[in-house]
Image 1 (tube, rainbow, N blue to C red):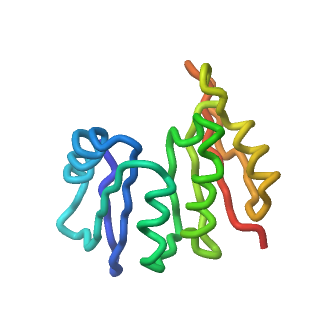
Image 2 (cartoon, rainbow, N blue to C red):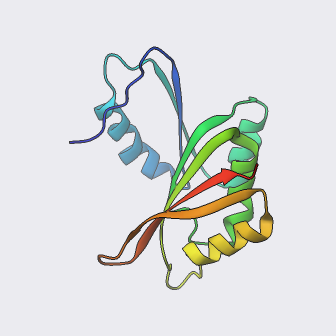
Length: 148
């Protein structure tokens, strides 16, 4: 059973982003629609394309998020700077970021250790591994928070 999107006494804002429009159109939107409940007073927005374009579009909206969830976004080291710029610009001071990713992306060079090293060099965030999944291709869930 899929988790339902609920709002208890407050309005929630969700932003969904994928590099590919087809993923948003054929998978993300239908999945969100299946999981909305009548009690949910939320706003959902959908974006596709490059991280820099997304950041530019969102920058004039002066929005910060308490939680950012990310999956399969660290497979290319050349995109780390763009992705962390999103985190720097849109994470609330006490917010949390969770990234689900493969430990290694064979053939493209990214992975959790590479991203962890990048974040340490960048500064500004703490990073820890919350969960490791060894079955099949090793995967991890990492948590980032702003340094105090």
